[in-house]
Image (cartoon, rainbow, N blue to C red; front, top):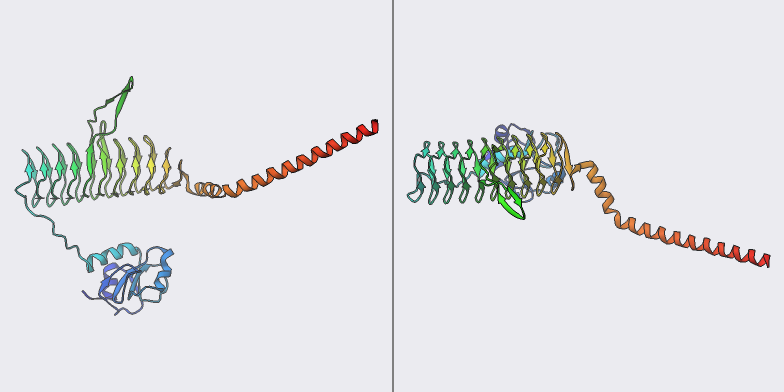
Length: 358
């Protein structure tokens, strides 16, 4: 495929600086790009790479005023580049169609138009699946569950009973939705299981990565708001509520009955205790341990999590501890030396007094 820079700028709604007739034949990352490719820079700390890239053109933010290559200035370089990826490297995966003869489909199942169910999938009784949804091999969907239209459920996903999933939801392999919440009552050293009779509700346009677990509520529901994106290996406990358009990054763990607001970012390996609230648009940094509620529009980091600026100051102090230890040791030695001198002088003074008396 060939496109001029002018044609690309029209597609992404950008402004050209440089030759609009530059021919683009491919798309690539800024370090790997070669002549004929278009690339992008979204983060200002990578602007220096524009001097080194072999790409023929670069998609940038509107803050960039000039570059050694022709550029397209856009409001969101990452989104513009994503459009180019779809244009120059379309997805060639062919999803299954129709219902495979080895699929096991229960009684009173309602299937929408053009639903695809592939080999060895198991659909239990009274399940509802919307139009154009695709179910890959070895998927399990439990009794009374409802899945919306245009969803994509990859292999080895388990969707337990009475779970509700909205439209255009994508769930990657190995994920379990609606497993029992972790609830036990301990009596005389014996752990007795507490029944988990709630459900999970996932709204429209949610994407869930591989090997994620979303537990059903003890009562009521565990809830994932529309547009939220969940990375691989995330644990979401019973009765958690996550607002719209939040980002939950890999290896994050959220304990039970926590409320996550809208537009929240939980970075990788962050941990959140139960029964707290994280306000709208808050950011929890990587590996932070959140032990109490976080106000809206706040960034926290560290363990226990604190406002990010305070956590950075504390960390800077911790990094200086070895030098501080050396300084304290030196001061201690000097104090001991001074103390010794004072003791010697005192003893000398006592000796002189005794000589005078004698």
